[in-house]
Structure formats: structure tokens, C-alpha cells
Image 1 (cartoon, helix red, strand yellow):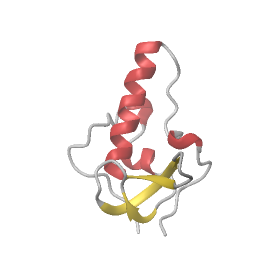
Image 2 (cartoon, helix red, strand yellow):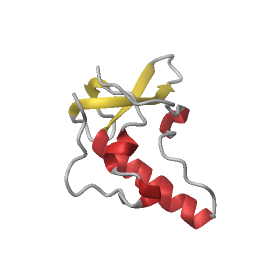
Image 3 (cartoon, helix red, strand yellow):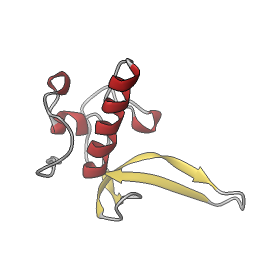
Image 4 (cartoon, helix red, strand yellow):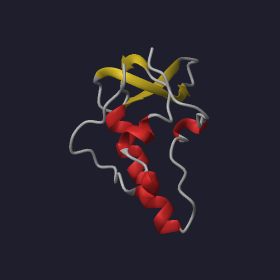
Length: 101
């Protein structure tokens, strides 16, 4: 099953010639709940938060939120004059095509 970017997403598909689907293809996907918007959808892991009480909360984001986060990273990189490299949210760049489980 391929993940299709939602319409009217905030990412600029012309950025480095990458379409929203190409950006989303840099991540691995599984069913879950997005930590940002709460939607039950396909999500990609971004990391975890450990509380002082020893609890651990996994942070997963849906495709719509990934595109929003990537768009903000792109704008930040432009403001700072640094290279923008999509697909590295959560510190894990994927080298090949992503699969959805």
C-alpha cells in the first residue's frame, strides 16, 4: 500500500525536485497514532521522551505532520544558510524506499 500525500499539504513539491510522496518515501511507516494531531493513521517513529518517573513515550508522526515538519526544517535551513536534507526527522535517514507495514 502506497502512502499518498494529503491534498493542500504545506510542503513545496518543487524543493530540490522532491514531491511530497518522495519525501514521505524516505521514512518507514506503520499503523499508529500521531503525537502531533492525534490521528490514527500510518505513522513513522521520530524518537521517544523519557519522563523523570521513568515512563517512556514514543513519538510517531503521520504523513501530514511529517510534511509540515519537513517544510519548517526547510524554511529554517534557508534562514540559517545551511543545507536542507529531507528524511532526517528523528535522526534516522532511510537509504532505500520505505515500506508500509
